Image 1: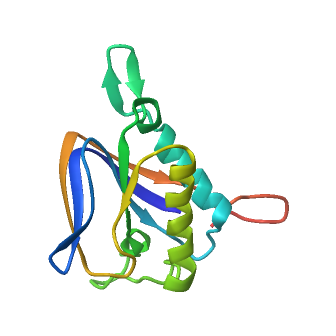
Image 2 (image 1 turned 30 degrees about the horizontal axis):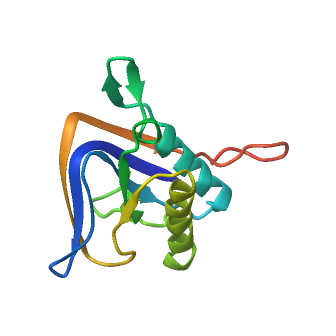
Length: 154
């Protein structure tokens, strides 16, 4: 599972002219799901986003969880684009919608279980995402496939 996370002063998602999700200060998390992802990885991604210490304070960097800030979660299958050959991205590594949607929903659910206010986009819709980046601070997060005995990394 992959995410691009941006520290924002505000962010919103619009679908067909209607704002479907908006936050003030917090994080915008574009979340992509790979073919081998599962609910455990989704919960781990939520924990990483919740605990990511990217908000400077007088006492050091703090997280959305520490400060009670919001997260806007937007599904983003294009994070799994393979652009190594030619001019057309391949989406072969992205999970199909029927696998990806419940895992993005699990990220949202886990963030909420942790006490985070969460707004979302609309899965599969053509969305316009607006944000005012702070810093700018943009990070790429990844929850890799588990590697155990008899397995190889992806």
